[in-house]
Length: 137
Image 1: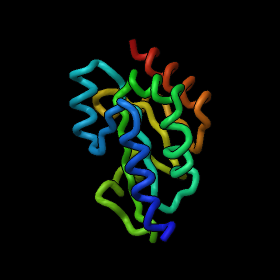
Image 2 (image 1 turned 120 degrees about the vertical axis):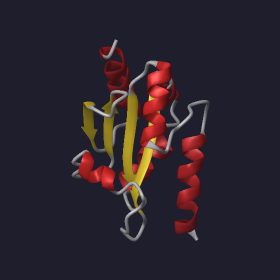
Image 3 (image 1 turned 45 degrees about the vertical axis):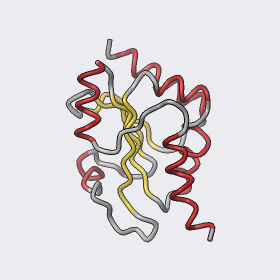
């Protein structure tokens, strides 16, 4: 039963607060152009405990929410719980993902400006996002 709740917890976390998450790279790029922002891309899998912790604990924090408002947040799940690929599996190869979660700051064209492998607690996450978001200006 607990395994069935994970997708709902993750989806609920992504919808938490006022931050609007994108789930498609092209949509995130269009929004980034329109809003003159960089893209924060979270590449994750259903089987990754650190990915779920990031979404459950870090993203909903007030610090992270404030930082995420300065970027276009993009969530791309690339593998299901059993390791089978999602439609976004190609992102792993495109961005040379070697572990999960894989966190990226992209420009509106999808070029990597910064990347951070692994889990970050709220304060370091917000600091990284704020630094990355301000460096584009």
